[in-house]
Length: 119
Image (cartoon, rainbow, N blue to C red; front, side, top):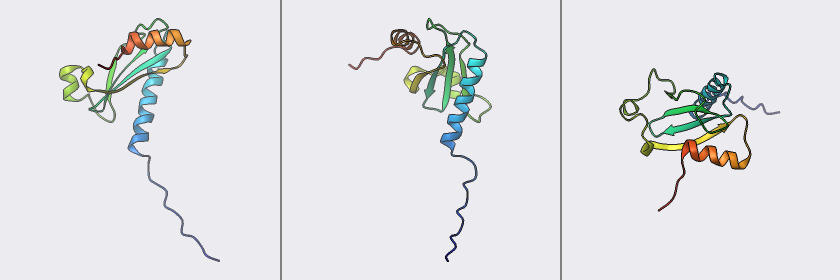
């Protein structure tokens, strides 16, 4: 009978998974402090910083905008200068806690994140 050597368990979790978990924790914290919020707008910037805010059923802010960077004491110098300029956005979405009907959802997304057209 052959005995297979045990595979070493990976120590820790991947950076991508850690980043995702940190983002989810921030979303949960924002929702907890925003009783009128039905979701959290998340804007990811190319520098690794993120901007987040809770939104209400009318697409209005239900919290302050929070800018943060994982595992850093503060946001990056670029964000300090341009406040996370739109040109540096790599992803944006709304994490829904209470997803509204499709028409309301489209209205809120357009109001909060804007609309894009390809020219």
